[in-house]
Structures are given as C-alpha cells and as structure tokens.
Image (cartoon, rainbow over all chains, first blue to last red; front, side):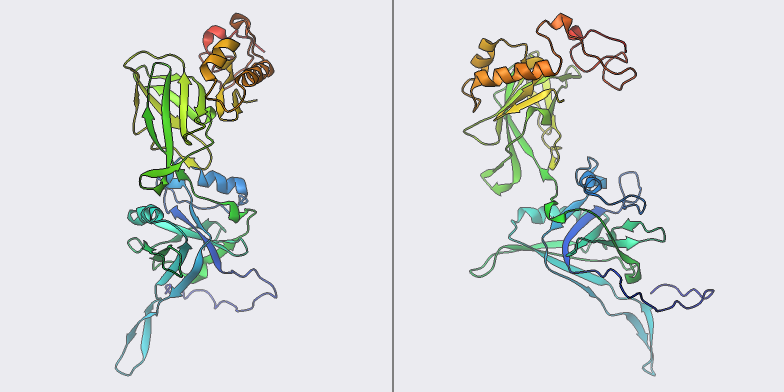
Length: 303
Length: 90
C-alpha cells in the first residue's frame, strides 16, 4: 500500500473507449535488476523496441546486462495475496500493506538441465518482463515511460522438474514472488516490433581439445543438453566464429581453417599459423545465439 | 566483404588460404571436406581476387581509410601480416 499523499486531489476514474489490454502470458524474460556497474537495466521510452534492440540484449557479452528469455509458457498464473491487515476488537480492519503477488508458469517438454540454469538466478537480484499473447512487453513503468523489469523477491525463485507419466510430459514449474514494493498500478505494456516466437536464450558451448600439433588441433563442441554420456554436438560453426590467442607470446594467431568432421558432428579440425612447441594457446568464440565463455576454461598446449 | 569463406563443412581465412598451392591445398584437405577440394580451392582464389589480394605477396595493396580504426601502428594499416601490406595514403 503506497503512502497517502494528502496535497493533491483524488484521481478521476474515467477510461477511454479503447485502450490496450494485457493478454495472457506466453513468455518471461529474466533480467538482472542492476548491471555490473550498478546501473539499472531497463528499456528506454525514447528508443523503439525493435528486433535489433532485443537481439542485442539477448547476445549481450556482459551477463549482467543480458536478457534470459523463457518462451512458450504454459498455464501462466499470477495471484495476488491477501492484504495484510490489523483487525481490532470491534472487528474493523486497517490495511497495513498489499499482499504479495506470486507467479507461476510451466515449461513443457523440457529436460532437467534447464532447472539448473533457471535456479542459477536465485542468488542474484532478478527481474522479469512478460510477453503476452499479443506480443506486448509487460513490465514496470516510471513517469518517463521507461519499462523496467518487475522485481522478483530474492529467495523466492525456484524451478522444479516434474517426471513424465504415461499421460503427461516432463515439465518444469517455475515459481517466484514479486517484491513487495512492486505496485500493480505501475504495471505497463510497451509496444514493440519483435517476433517473439523466434526468441531463444543463448546456448552454452563446451569444448574438449585433442590431437594438438604446431599447426592444428581438434575441438569437440557440445551443448549442456543431451545424454549424460553423449551431449548434443554444436554443428555448423565456422572459422570466423573463433579467435585463437597465444598466451605464451601474448599474440593473436591466425586461424587458417576450421573443418567440421563429416563423421563426428560437432568435431572440428582447426589449422593455424605454425606455433612454437610448448606455447599455450587459447581459443575463444563469438557467434549470435551462443555463449562460448567456457571454451577457454581449458587451454591448448602446443606439443 | 568478409575475409572468410565457408563451403560445406570447410571454412577458412582467405588471405592465408589463397597462398597455398592447389596441390598443397588438396593434399591437406582432401578427405576432410565434403566438397570437391579442387572446387573449394578455386572458390578461394576467386574470393581472394574479389578481396583485392594478389598472388605476389609483396605487391598486395590494401587501402584502409585514413584515420580508420583498423589495427596496426599506422592509420592506414589493416590487420593482415605487415610484410604483405603496402601502405597507401588516401
């Protein structure tokens, strides 16, 4: 319950004949409330929300500024708790605070791997934008018309995996509460030109290196998803997606070619300018839709 | 135009690849490329010409706009091996 402001008049209750009304939720975009510099993440009222703007946020190299979308939601619900009231002996009650809003949605036909990724946000101050059926982006607005993510109460975010049955699919149920300060009257929609059905979060890529020589090495790239003993391979990568660095010499190394194996998908042979034996090489990657930040966890020793 | 080329499962950096002889290229990549290696080689040579690369490395002329942010110690260099770059002021 907002504090009473007594120096202005009551607000009128007229409504226009036509106004945009929120439809049911089909997507949720998790966003850190603050980036690594302490600046709030938000969508400016003065910048049109275009596909380019959203794709830039999805592929943001700074994880603290990135958008983490969860699309194709099922059974999304949002329930406001009862107001907190003090009741007196004469049975009258005084509203102390509004109830807390609790949200929930289901991600159908998803593997438990995603549970861990969603739960990784539990330790951060996160917010959420919603995407409704009409493609509107829903968040919290300010007097300037900026759209901020709705603050999630820290410690309430959870995702739970449900085993499939003979009549149901495997699913993940995501739950959290809004921060108590998030007032319903500040919820707002932003118009945009994004085709939300094509939106996906970044895919983490892992690498295992083998067969190094002074001019070549083999890299096997996999996703986090797949079988425990056979992760899904990352196919279709090209030399331009990568950069090679000689850690020993502190110098970049020209990648001459990258050839994906025709028999073992996701396995690439890299050829590069000849390097000195016992030098340490580090591969890095950059491609829209992928996060290669973990492929340099392991370096390559030139034999 | 990008300095990279992708054909089938092969991708590479044209400014380095085009210097290989056809025989070396085929010997290196035959069997690993899911295309005819000689056709890939010819495509690399064509791409190299489109990039303005020349078979004689010492005569390669790559013009970068003055005061560009291209890598290098001078305003008019681009990020290719220096031995192959002839600086041109424009």
